[in-house]
Length: 229
Image (cartoon, rainbow, N blue to C red):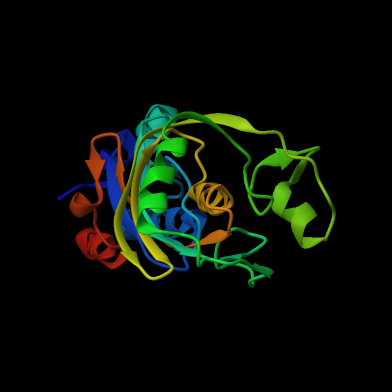
């Protein structure tokens, strides 16, 4: 069992983030629980790569001196599974906002779907969603979006090492993707819809891997709290 000194010297903890929690909430909860369990005034806790509230899966949490290694873990390849819905888009590219446009899907064949994935492997240019935490002129992009202000976003180069379609159920596409730091899977969904001469948005997302860390080795928040008792 770990003690206060172990957490201060540094631990790398794998947490399976639940739906509707922000990554920041997970860090805050864990920090509070460690402080409470060991009666500490303070302890450093941070995560190596944000997950959106509507995503679940692997968060790498670092404590104490291990927080210095966050950038190293953050830069490692990440793997996700999830679903896209074809034929409609949302301003946030996912379920955070309501559908704003619908598009035809009758022309989309399974062959076309599988073939289109080839456009999204290797190094690609990607525009981050306007509903994101990227800063421009000192403000988060989502602040512009929620205020209804138009903002110009520069594209960035990201690397996708594999993009597989695992199942097709009518207009619901199940996928698995391995990609570099900075890749937005929401943007991938939106761009995939455009490439099919239609529209698409992300309907579920789960992070399964960061580097060699895998979600099957992660604890739930409740499991972590129990381990402190």
